[in-house]
Length: 101
Image (cartoon, rainbow, N blue to C red):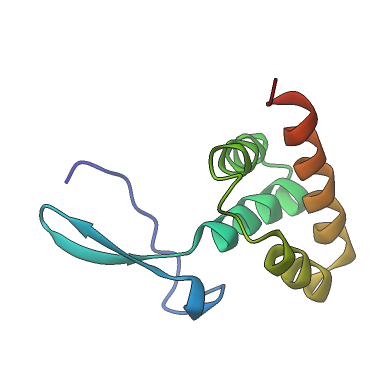
């Protein structure tokens, strides 16, 4: 398959319950859940001022708006750091105000 992947470490930085088994023509692989992926991008945006990660976080929130588990993301963000929780709320609000007609 011609897709980029990232394997940053051997430990999962999210919930094992949120991992998705992705079936492909070449077989299957396990992928981090969308909620944890959004949180990962928000961390990069907040702590490393990564503009590209902010774009991805917003796009993922928008494109998966109906399926994200906002309660889960809020709980994880609050448990981790108030700055991450505030960033989540800020970007969720930005998406709802700017990306929907």
